[in-house]
Image (cartoon, rainbow, N blue to C red; front, side):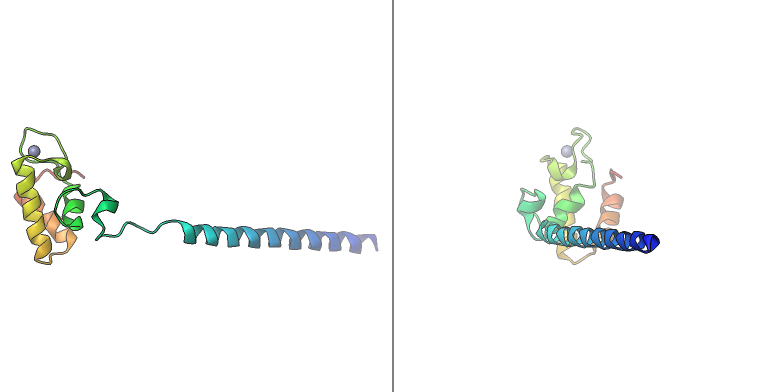
Length: 116
Ligand SMILES: [Zn+2]
């Protein structure tokens, strides 16, 4: 009899733990749905692109150093003529419908200074 009681209280504790886990899981789901989604590629303000280039151009430009030799800036943040030429080139490829990976390879070949 004593043994049986012990087992029952263990079961109750297990139920208790299970319901806590369920509540925590529910809370996590709610939290996940409230967190903002990834920045949208078409929303320039969200990813910090200030210039009049497409968001894709900005994203690719963040992966290259300016090749002018004078400034040590990221292309996306540089305003020298070389950076502008690089961005114009990227923009052109974006408009031509090249996938991002290919554009990066083209910029690597034409300008170099890939950052990573
Ligand atoms: Zn530059």
